[in-house]
Amino acid sequence: MNYFSSNFKLGILGGGQLGKMLLAETRKFDIQTYVLDPSNEAPCKIACNHFFQGSLMDFETVYNFGKQVDVLTFEIELVNLEALEKLENEGVKVYPSPKTLKLIQNKGIQKNFYIQNNIPTSNYSRFTSLENLESNIQNLKLPFVWKCTEFGYDGNGVKIIKTISDLENLPNVECIAEEMIAFKNELAVIVVRNVSGEVKTYPVVEMEFHPEANQVEYVICPARIDDKVAKKATAIALQVSSTFNHVGLLAVEMFQTEDDEILVNEVAPRPHNSGHHTIEASYTSQFENHLRAILNLPLGNCDSKVAGIMVNLVGEEGFSGPVVYENISNIMAIGGVTPHIYGKRETRPFRKMGHVTIVNEDMKQARKIAEEVKNSIRVIS
Image (cartoon, rainbow, N blue to C red; front, top):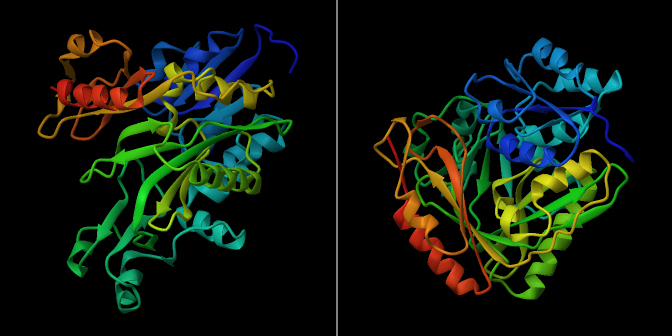
């Protein structure tokens, strides 16, 4: 693409916070934006040119929406694949492609893909249902990680199974049982690839998780790891990216084992929680680079300007209802601290409601401030 015109139309499937942050970048360019989301109160509604309410899984809704745009992308994987395939066949540019999404949308298919392509990953078994898993429980080594293959998000659809009784109340759906990995760190690398095949990577980040909610609490960039490990993680992320042959962003989540091997956990073909710090800390944010990639523009510099830490803001336990951000002015008085409020009206326990970025030339100081931010701000109702 060597030009923009005011008639150029970009469609985004999903109207959540990822779409909202992507829309902040589209305003740099002369593009019309169309968003489809099931909620009439989606965060994207205030930031796009045209908003449509409807199901992302309904064929007709997605197909009719996609016919209106020149390029179609998504901020959530749970979209109707058949509609995307038909749109692509009819000439709408869909990035990442339905072919790529098909390999990623179902976690069982995704794990099979790693094995078939010699990508290092944990051992696993795939089951058609929870009942099928329970009838084969004697073949599984406890503890293991249970994951539903579809419709999981933000820690939902994932559970560590320590005893057979932990299987109670889980949904009777297709699932996988993954071997528990003894790891030092959970890492991620975001790879960006444009239509012409230009590829760049962001620095390796380290993720610290909430022990109960299985959600990222902190994303730390650069990761506090040995340079050899960082190079290995980046090389494996590039291998994964090349094998999926995606266009746009691919976030590759990985484990660093006790003996410094790198195992791929899972991927997301879109802007990702592990890249939110890039808005303040990088020369080019993940959101601008996703846009550049799907519009086949030269990719921006992925280097960090400064150390960055992202703190997730999630709903406090015990609070549900209209949201209040307590002590936000206190954290904004600290140098290098930038809050991002997503615009969701209702909070509930562990719901992602925003994030805060801390930038500092001294990583230790950035981590100290991140702790202070985490302990100060509360998302309540």
